[in-house]
Image (cartoon, rainbow, N blue to C red; front, side, top):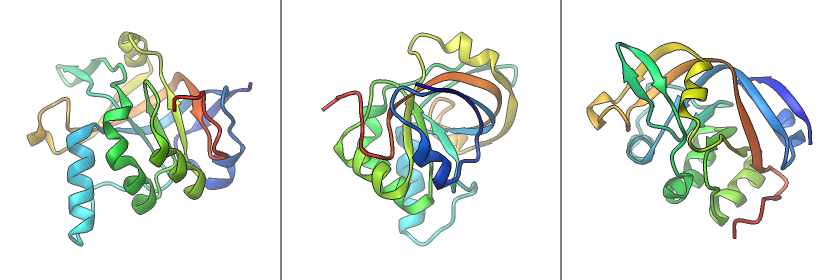
Length: 177
């Protein structure tokens, strides 16, 4: 197990060095995405459109942050398995390198992580206030019409973590399935 401080723009070589059990603290930009944002993103792409944000080499966070006065006051992870039906395609099509959530993901995501050089990490459930302390600010918000929890929030973070690697790009997991 290694403890690492990384930027949120990840290249494939660096991701492939990450192993189950590594603990990461991120600085940079992360994108929140839940069910409806995944669905909309894939519909846009599959219909020949372009997303208003670029996920290539980026990290998404399965989270619906609590916002008050344009400030994140809580940002705990949501259950990732709900996104299992979307994640493989999102990784494959966008070049996404990292996913943060809770509770693990399934076989399709595991295959996509290995094939495309990405990693799944977990942030401690119930620690939304801790997560909010690492969020410096909101850079953008997309698709607010989906509702605040389902919108894509572009968050600037500093030392965001601990994020525990629980599915690596070598096919190793903590044994969710």
